[in-house]
Amino acid sequence: MATGLPEGPPPPKAERRTLDPKLDVVFKILFSRNEDLLISLLTAVLQPAVPIASVTIVNYALPKSAVQDKGGTLDVLVRLEDGRLVDVEMQCRSQKGLRKRALLYWARLYGSEGGPGKKHLDWPPCVSIFFLGFCELPGERFHRIFQVLDVDDHEVFSDALQLHTIELPKVPARVGESDELELVRWSRFLAAGTDAELEELAMSDSTMGKAKEALDLLSADPTVQELARQRELAQWTYRFEMGISHKEGIEKGRAEGEGALRAAVEAMCRAFGLSLDDERRQRLAAMTLQQLEQLIQSLSTDQRWPQD
Image (cartoon, rainbow, N blue to C red; front, side, top):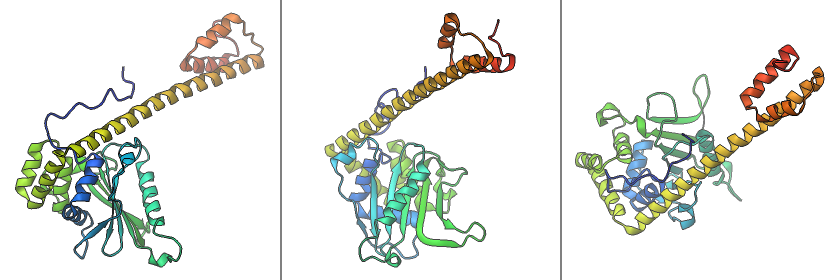
């Protein structure tokens, strides 16, 4: 019987020996340790008018508590040369409320630029980039860019907010099928399910070759392997606990709903002058939610106990 709960930790992926860069801890380590790859990734997403020469990673450290945080997310927070803050996140699995959380993350990031002695005019724009391992938005475009715009003439209200989503399942199968060639390559690298796919990308482009080499090094590092294992375990535990909570919530809601309907039946019986003897109370206590709804409908129509 399907319960909506994870059946167990995912089995090891025999088809690849490299770590999965869609796992946020691997994603963070990969791009935090390789500035040239991070610049290439940011350039592919942002397509800046002026090339990005260097970046500063604001949250380089990876506390053990963050890896073991079951419900938390790991990101790569970067400050560009022009002062802009860019938050890069990898979300592997769909979660309810993603769009609201994305706005909340941006708001916190933008608000963090304030403080004593800082004027609003001095606050730099903040950019949020979400790589998604699932489909979140309608349509076929894999890369979407959101800003605050006028609904009629599309006048930009402010450049302070820019939010990118890259939905990996929608990435074109071939690089030439999109005008965002570099972003397609990076997206295919992140979404690759086998080492053969990674090797094919590495053979076709020098940057992808460097990315594969960097991922190979991480995958051979016992420390990174352990961090990835702990992160996967923490995320699976979180999903399991959320599944339990959801199931308990449904059961609690069903119990509360049945209690309310039984109280409504008793009130209707009093209003219609119908007796509730022990036999009827026993039947009432054993009724399901659907049976209670049917009983209320019958009482409302006939004003008598069924089969009387």
